[in-house]
Image 1 (cartoon, rainbow, N blue to C red):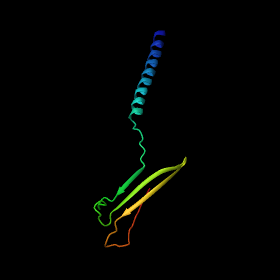
Image 2: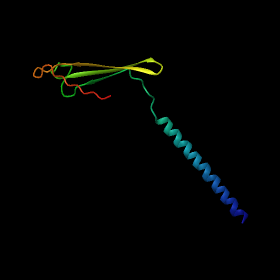
Image 3: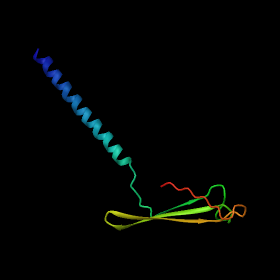
Length: 98
């Protein structure tokens, strides 16, 4: 009878140690698999169908940049450059979601 209780205690201890070891290994893999953050000062968005580099009418380029102006405030700047279409003079339609 005493031998059975000792075996049960040993099994519980072995199972506990095995679980802790597996958890530690998995945690190590997960922590090392995340990549480091890289700060980006500006992002450029160009029209896909019309080439801004080739001065195609109707093409555009939006440059978004950000910089810290105080400890808890950021100034975000959007610069839009477009090449007007000859057929639709004076009708630039811009839709931005940030």
